[in-house]
Image (cartoon, rainbow, N blue to C red; front, top):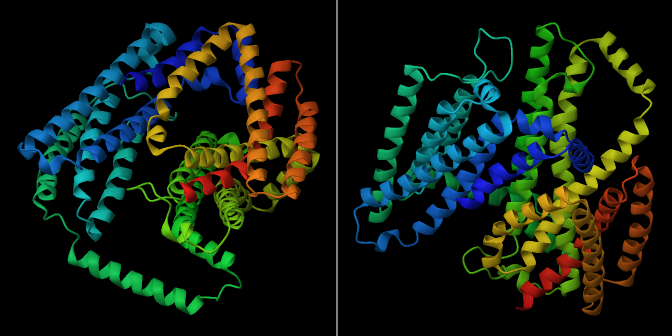
Length: 536
């Protein structure tokens, strides 16, 4: 609870107390206007806090279900205790965070104008109980349940968003200032029904009768048969063992992730297209894709969602979740550690490229291109002329390249980090976040300390990369050609971007340029992680 409160309160509180020079420094560091994103971020606060509560609740329930069948206590008491604990954490964290926002960030007048409290708190509390009900209800899989819960959650989120944009107001995100009796009654009915549904579903789980339905079993069997027949019909005998392992690893761990990201890209495409068309119906036709406020929001959240899908899926692709041992077909395949590492690295790189293709190209850029094409030849010609006449095309291309490299840095290094450390430490690594935030705060308020932190980051990133390559080369996991290519990259690309940054702050230029060294780090750390998991 303390960690969640810090994550919700500390960043905006620090930003509010920063001098203008510090805010300008952070804007240059992160490429985003932090003051506006923080002070006007009520919906982001609700979404982020809901995500944290969801992660915490699912983690608690996953741990509780292992011992819940052996506890000599009534099911209603167990479930009610878990729900009440989650509700207390949700309400206390929300109210404490809101009080800090009111006293230290907004001020009373601005807070009352922009930050509703009662409605969002009641909605989050209701969704916490719904989460408990869905968790126990889905223990007995069925076709209806798999269809019902996604639609119910999407409908609940849509219902919540409509509280902020009533039909009589032309603006977006109008605060939910008052909870009407109908809204309160709706949330109360859902709250009570979900509570009793969680008790009943948990009782069935404890009795051992929560089994998949016959319809689901038949459908699953038919789908498995169809999948098997399709694979047999399309199967191409691999030319080598490496090709066979790559095909098996892709089917086992990567294909589902890419399908989810493809669905995410399609969702982003249709959402942005609808909002673009809605703006044109209001008489606002601009060639800037940011004419719709949803474009920027969908870009941020869709990229974050793609990173989260890849991260969660790929960190569990190497070992089994129950005993944390490496999967049998990876551990026993007749390939050397070097060959197996090359196969998995190619699959990870393929996942990253396809995720960018579906989210950025199809979802974001595709929606804008489709909108322009729907406007007719005049708008298309005008858009093309504006692109040709745009003077900063080179800067956009260079910045886009940096963004793509940053995407790879985060995904690949996170995967290698969690593959190399123990599972217990992986589960508790979030406890380091408040310490990192406190260090960042000290660095912002004390420039000398911040300069030391940035120098320390540059030194650690370069040192870790060098050590990883030395260890991987000694273990015969990489060849000299990889080392030469990595060294060439580290000499050319950071130096190129060093001249690209159009500001004079040495720590900031050093931070951004040295972070590019982490692009090549996974090509040594991932082979080391695979070798360690294979022989431990």
